[in-house]
Length: 206
View (tube, rainbow, N blue to C red):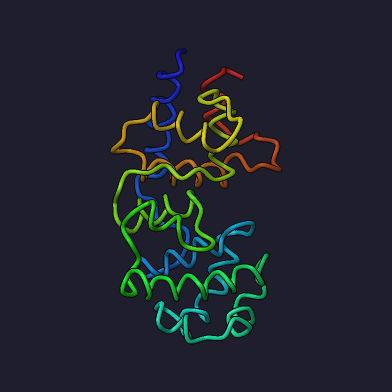
């Protein structure tokens, strides 16, 4: 089976499993999505979803977030990792959105990645899920499965993203990256033994 054939099989099986894919992070607009994705670094989406209701009840806009003191933000997000850094970033991000973008989340990779705490992956999620621009954010599940499925050498996320974009049709990227994440969580967790990982077995007859 060629790499392209493997990629097509993966796409077809994931589409059968997950014809509809919700965004795993709870949010209600581009700003709350940006905040939630920023908070999700080195923690789980589930944990982020547990703390954001209270955070968003106090600060669901850049204006409200900028008015909170850093220690107040930290108190609201203290249950997740790197809360000191994330609180500092959220406050400064809100201030810069007001100063440079009239309090609106910018629809640009360059502008998003200039915000504190926003790397390429976070910007890719916001561009794809909030604004509908084709992007392929790579998380740990995608990195691991692309390598496992021999669709990428998987040396780093930049290479995995480039390989994914070459193999998969552009109009599938936004949905497919979520489908792979859902599959990884349900069928092929990093600490599991992979008994349920039927796609890998289909690809390599193991």
